[in-house]
Length: 185
Image 1 (cartoon, rainbow, N blue to C red):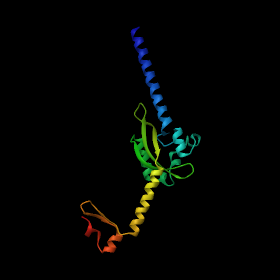
Image 2 (image 1 turned 90 degrees about the horizontal axis):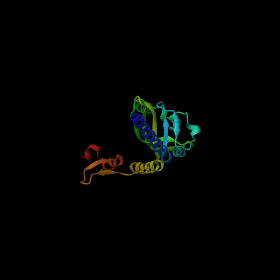
Image 3 (image 1 turned 90 degrees about the vertical axis):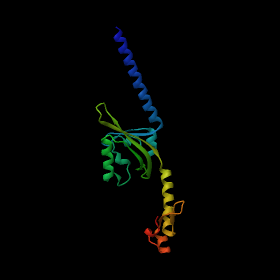
Image 4 (image 1 turned 135 degrees about the vertical axis):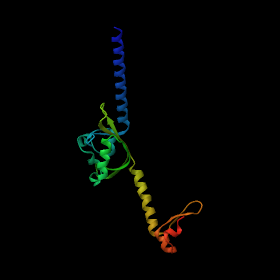
């Protein structure tokens, strides 16, 4: 009789824990851009925030390969294949990734890919949480373009605060008549 009550209490506690986990999962999906993949990269599900970010509907993405979201040429690379092999081995991945919006425009995502394991310890699926950093990436590319233009058109030398030469561009070397190894250090 007492064992039956204790088992009922344990079942009730487990049911409450499951409900809490489900509520947490739903809260994350409601507020974050989340997409779920099979270990082979098939799209299983995506949150409304993720769908809005990439411009696709769930009907367009579900059952499709991850490569649908990749920029041209990305999915055919050895690096991409290794990326998915690492995920299948249970190794999470994070960083800034170039992806493709439904309209074909590049989209830059700061993302974490997290393997989710089943009770046997195998990767059952992969969750990705992402944020759109396209504007930041475009600003970075614009600044880099300015720096590249400066290096092509001006003589530039780089120093430490104490005056030690770190580097000089080819324009500086040609204008001043030095070789790089004569200046560095």
